[in-house]
Length: 417
Image (tube, rainbow, N blue to C red; front, side, top):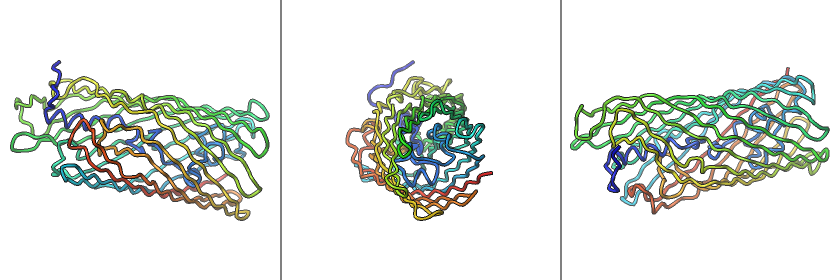
């Protein structure tokens, strides 16, 4: 196989930029690192202090040991919307603006106590990772940035919690995940443009678990771990607008394969009831983003411009740190507030507007109503991501100033039978 020289061919440069997207669990809300936004209104409302205090049905996937407090069969629907404002000001004075900023997360959970306070089963259907970035296909940066990059995932997550001691509960679960990847990348063809389309889907399996220790009736300590999940994906590669035998040497159509590894993580949460009305939580999480070391690209019949090598990302491990509070206003109403800091893991060298990475500060507020059998929660989160200047990108035209702010609204409705 031919090795590209340091002066990269534009088609290879375009592919390399697109390939960075393949690695992103952010491509989500992206990684456990970027699947940063909680999927329920309760969890978002106390965003930095949820691991020990979360009590809704999403505990089936977030911290399964917490399910032990469920005494009646429960179903819960979570939905909402996100607005992601991404802008890039290149050193070449080019400006890119995200053209499709809206996202619509969705999940459905059910909990079934088998032996109340002793054994509980849960299951969730969710979209834990997902992202779509769309940029102007006529921009002067169209050869470096995919005009469209989209990742969609669906996960079925069965889990169980059982009390092994008066003060200790264990929880275990599995993620059975399906992923769908689509990338459109413009390439130069002399006096005209062509387009490379990558379309692939695949499956992955992983596990997660948690331990809940309650040293006193008003204190909780939760340890949550997730194993890495590798998504093996295969599909088709199509070069559009590229005549057969053109100097670029592209096969117009071939098989395409790649894989993504969503990273392992380890989190610890502490919750305490300061009074009968006020509860505080504190969370810390470590995420093994270095599992994104390299991403294989296999386009079978294509030549060295689309190499079958791996593209290194050199992502760094990262931490999240935060707090959250819940205040019981009355028998039926409560308020929540939270803060979470999430550390950036993407170095300048592999930076791309397809998956903008920043240090993130999340501020949230929430309100909840709870009846005898029904419960409704609503929360708003603001993700403040300070402007970032990139000066050492492997693709020079991607050096510049990046801006990204996100607004999130989540609504959860649950019913006990």
